[in-house]
Amino acid sequence: MRPEFAEKARCGAVSMPTMKLLYQTHSPFARKALVFAHEAGLTGRIQVEHQETSPTRRNEQVFVENPLGKVPVLLRPGLPPLFDSDVICEYLDTLHDGPRLIPPAGEARWQALRVQAVAQGLAEAGVALRWETVRRPQALRYSPLQEGYADKLVATYGWLERELDVDSPLHAGHIAVATTLSWIEFRELPGFRPGRPRLAHWFDDFERRASMRATPLSGETCD
Ligand SMILES: N[C@@H](CCC(=O)N[C@@H](CS)C(=O)NCC(=O)O)C(=O)O
Image (cartoon, rainbow, N blue to C red; front, side, top):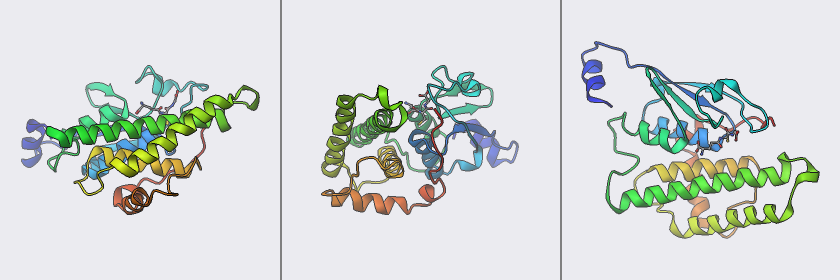
């Protein structure tokens, strides 16, 4: 929390300004930001607003705030909008007094960030795979691309089975991986469980967290 907010909040001089999160109930990226907000204890300060987005259907309300037309976007009173999900998480991490979810220094930081990066890439590959399987009209699908994206998913599952630091304190990378894997199951993309007991066990535990239960995925992409 910024010191001036903290001091005024302690004295009861101001109520904390409310932010708005342009969200989507079926976006892994938006859910990552919202789960992060739950874990940071910030949901009382964030109003969540669902927005449908697709590169084939322009959403003016989103484009006004983000030239890429994507969610999530965090709207802050009197300050510029923030995107993308990783930037939003980094900002939210400056607003709370609990342990940092993005470790400030040392190997813990690099581990959290590389896990977050892998999860981001996994979600992006999953979205790309859905274009080649269900979103693009049949005649425009390209099977070598489909296979290439599916390979990335499988390779990343193997990497996570080996490299995910399942016993370290909660960090942004854990949130990113859990929200991505949850979305992968929701969209019935190639499964990550077979042959990866460590990852599957960790994920099942993570899904029981209040932050995950409070943010269920729902809805269909509208292209
Ligand atoms: N790198 C962005 C990705 C955001 C993203 O791709 N969001 C999707 C929803 S899952 C979207 O709004 N897509 C609309 C589009 O591609 O035009 C982030 O991490 O926030």
